[in-house]
Image (tube, rainbow, N blue to C red; front, top):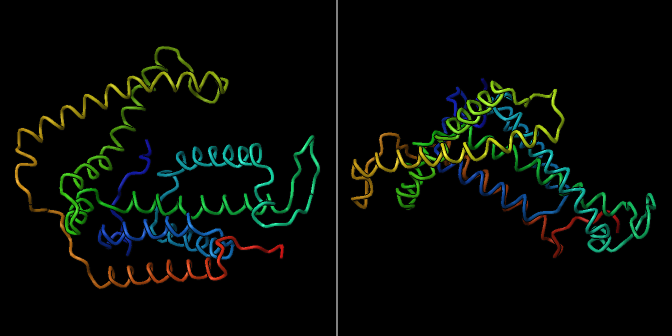
Length: 275
């Protein structure tokens, strides 16, 4: 059974980077993508995202199922934007080029399509960054890195536990799913979509109860070991910033700064090809 969004040690330059470096990359990349609507910037970020994704040697089986879910919500989001704000692109770009006139006040315009293209580009620039961050970052090393930059080790440890238990939650999900199927509940592609949704929804409550039980076990174990008694602690997986970390940080921050300068140089964060 393939593990989704699980850290696996690989022989890549990304795995050798410190957790702080990966966090700064993820935050800078995500913030830049969220702020800009410059299609040129987003296009460059999209290409770089897939280059980095390839360089991280992340296997499709680790992210494929999650990507399909995200893609579904992306389609729903794009359709919802058109349904509730069909002229949003017209308002932003100040022109109106009707391509197809639909019923009532609904019309497909070049401006609306261009606006929603930028929304799609935003998704596809951030998604690879999320996958790269999760599958290349050792949770324990990441917690140590957070503590090193001044974040409380309690918070760092909470984040590390959350990342570490992703595969365990997946295992619980598949165990419950297999148990349901053994009782005759069809969850494969043979069942209707509505039936599959209902069947999967029925897994949620057992999964929550199992997770709560695990939380209680971990909390008791940490309390028995005196976790949180002292203001500081040592880290077995602690790692200092190396030369490649500094070079990566400089490159990421310079790129983010350049992208935002290009975006806002004319006072607007929207690139307008219609003027």
